[in-house]
Image 1: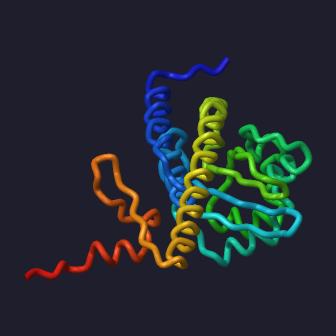
Image 2: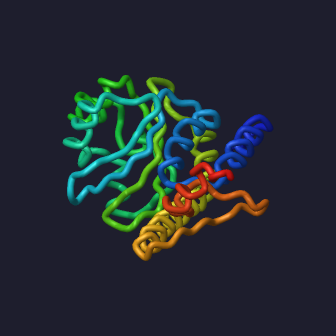
Length: 224
């Protein structure tokens, strides 16, 4: 049985404390891929949105990857064993490429020769966040060596439910931001100015206040 050490638990709790801060989807992905390696060491971390049916990929990585290499990934992503497994089973638990392929078989893939070898990756571990099909949202960690351990898998499986909730929170924040923007546009069409306030009475300088209102408050007041 795999046991976590006290330092593993401290790193996990620190990561969770920061992850539950409210963020929109635009901020969620950079936060996760920049902080998750503090819990499970990796050379690259990536947030990936894949549509296997349409052959489309978008995402980001830390450190960034040459867009030309990402084009190669898109061409060969049907060879990826973790994407294929999820498409068959919808099993989003933490899995490694080595769960499915030997090193020799992995190296025979065009996906390896045109993408993974070019970025210096020999091992990958990943899990999936719920998304409406056929979209697959995955977070992956990559290394040159050694392969990821069962301790790493356990930590990521423990974190996954929390990241699912944080992802849903980010979706809700994004939705509220979009609704506030649309409401502001509708109000301005009526020629009205609207301002929302913080609890201490200060005006919120964001999309919740219409541009007309912000212009009024930023204009200098005439003095007699």
